[in-house]
Image: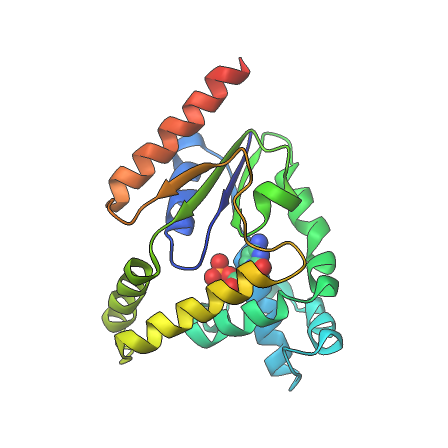
Length: 209
Ligand code: DC
């Protein structure tokens, strides 16, 4: 079984993907981490994230980079969003994601284009979202809890900028697949969102039987 979980930044898609992984006993790939690694490697190379050639060169990042805590930084998320605009970068990361999706036994992937490009044949697709204000509120609280002092308005502006870049790019933009369940978590807590996701996947599995 392949499960695709897409959605904008700070929507809770990562949390839902991990919870589905534990529930159904499937491996999970956070594909955003690959783009984050490319963005961060571009910086380490003193390259420019907006230049396709620099971003493509950074696709040869070492796998050990995927464990670097710096990938979780807000600044790295911004770099990831910038390098992900280049079709060359998307092509370089494509096969790795497809192979993960098609491994025997199935897999869960979370990202922006899983249900549309990487695994259009997925058995269950979820598009997890929440209002920009709510996502900014969650991200702001998370940053403060980690001791990162930043204003709410800065976080909201960053989320809006990332949304615009991720949905506005020409290649594989963030868009809900026609057959994906729209899960708006604005008014849901974590447990309710996870329960809704599990119920949907169960329903899809029943249908396929
Ligand atoms: O999910 P995230 O915030 O870690 O993703 C960081 C950036 O990577 C996101 O702004 C856009 C890009 N990305 C992408 O283009 N396609 C994916 N499948 C996953 C992430």
